[in-house]
Length: 81
Image 1 (cartoon, rainbow, N blue to C red):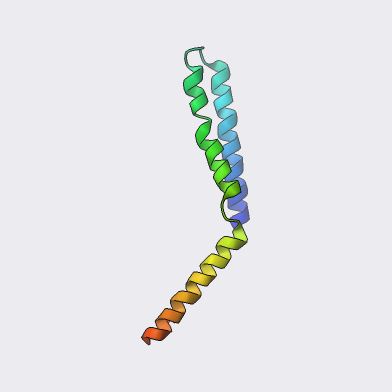
Image 2 (cartoon, rainbow, N blue to C red):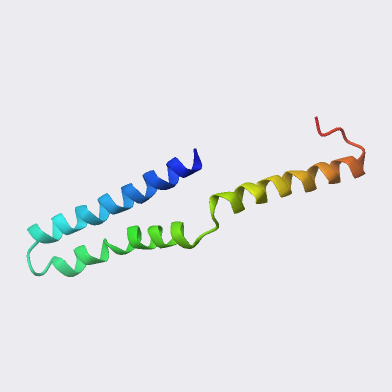
């Protein structure tokens, strides 16, 4: 499921970039610098997706966090179930 969301996010960002270039192709010369600024958010989003923690790392992090919480609950004498 996470892989699907990752792919969909990348496709959405690429479509936004294509949309910006369509806007630029129809813009007047004074509007082009403003339209170019609209390219940065999807580019930064793609960069964050590529450079962030991978799917397995996030999954392991969640499992580790849950295990630590269960351990703390056992130390407090609370049944985690």
